[in-house]
Image (cartoon, rainbow, N blue to C red; front, side, top):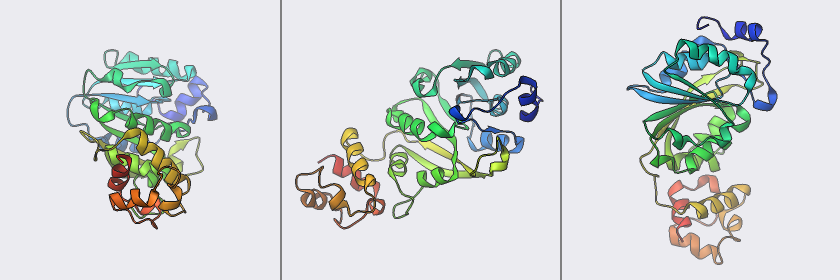
Length: 272
């Protein structure tokens, strides 16, 4: 079955992409090859793939220098296709039927691993934040290579001062070096989504970029970016009894908007 393309698989198995699972299958083999190339597999490693769908990306990953590949799939209708791929790589491919939102990536901690996925768009940012904030720097995960809607990807990699800067920009910068490495047109997917997509490569840091208090950091970011058009002194006034003094203490100008404040200042603020 390794030579059968995505369109043919859909016809053979009677598969229909399910909107509730956020399914958009990549059928462009050139794009699938580039995704694996961008993931920088340079040594024998394990791979985790979320939402393998029709297995196009899975098959490309299996061609690389991998030890084992773990795929997490929720849609039971896709298991016959994945089982056929497993028959070709019985010792390498491991199929896990589970909701990705409940899957703990630390189950793979016995060996260095990377995550490579064309994520279901309806859970892409939820999964990313869950992984990053679950102490990812202390796992054996080395990198994430993930597909997002282009607008979401631009928010993730947005730098200080950009109008696209958001909570997810700061969280990504805190735990990783994120880089947009590939733009993908909507025509590369079945069904064709309404928007284009982008691939981001996240190099996982060995420890968070700055010292911070995780629970306070979340509270501060939520308050700041829920009112991102307001000055920081206004959006944080309910977090700090004396917000002006708190901002002065870490060197933040009280009239700045949150998207114009560097990550380190938010981290310092969380320690007060």
